[in-house]
Image (tube, rainbow, N blue to C red; front, side, top):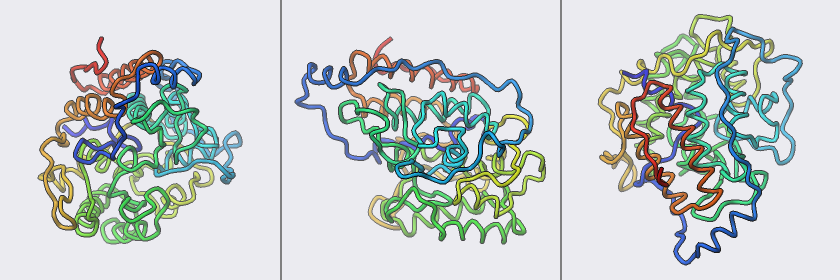
Amino acid sequence: MFASLAVYTLLALKVCTVSAFPAYKSLAGLTREALDAAVSSTTFVPPPSPPGPLADQSAKLVNDAAHPYQPLRPGDQRGPCPALNTLASHGYLPRNGVATPAQIVTAVQEGLNLENSFARFLTYSTFLVNGNPITNLMSIGDKTSGTGQDPPKPATVAGLDTHNNCEGDTSMTRADAFFGDNHSFNESRFQNFIKYSEKYGAGKYNYTVAAQLRKFLIQDSIQNNPQFSLVSPRLFTAFAESVFPINFFIDGRDTSGQLDLDVARSFFQNMTFPPNFFRRAGAVSNVGQNVVTDLLPNFKPGYNAHGVNTFTVDSTSATLTEPCLRYTNFVNKNIKQLYPNPTGVLKQALTINLQFLYEATVAANESCTQVFPYGH
């Protein structure tokens, strides 16, 4: 059952349902002519088809001479995803942190060996809410002019740092947005990572630790974050991201399933592969997530409705066993709220990227009915 959640991890995917939407400005008063003029002033880059699977999926040295670590330069973007941060620091992504969806799909496959449909889904679902459909560019960190002129509001093109678009509550190494910086490495959070690894993993991070830490993080946010929210699609990624470090941050020559804490810090904080690091052998998605979900079988999506310790179930959100509802709500609510009435090349770009998203869903063995928010 939980293998069906493969496409919902990492990065990418943390746009909340209507109950947790940020307040976007309305398009009321903006004429069709004004909308078309705003879009036409930006050079349209038609989205190319996403890359396919790697021909060679073997373990491979990735911290090599062709991909040396380089420190950040002024203006370089880094954000809440340690995997993308590391790939940019080593040149698998543009080092400035502004990339196309195709570049991201290629990078996560080449650098980490993510399974292709998994890589495509996380990339296009993230890009559709955080990237610029017209220029085909997205920041892996904060909003930047490097993605080109924005489409008209309510679209934000705000990068992965935007709360409840990519970043979400209960991160393992980033603070909840309510407490301020929601995208930088947080040492207090990482100390919990260490504490639970020592308690349940003999000093290593593994699937058992992942489950216990996820349970703690949810309880901690309910008790301390008055604006806590954990609904679809962030619900899916919160559980799936727990096993991501085990599946992709362990050297590919090591089959123990035990992540060294210094290696974890290398990715989470320092944004670099360890020396002589090999990617995993064989492309996978979210192996081991059932261990995490099985510890919390009765958890329902929801949020603190009236301050801390007021957790309320959100009946409109997809649960962990409803990936097709998650897809339908994402398209019909999230994308439609950002782009309620697109025309011209903006509509063309959105339609193409939504098709890529659906194809990735089907490739991941989800028998979801395709939805067309802008018509066939």
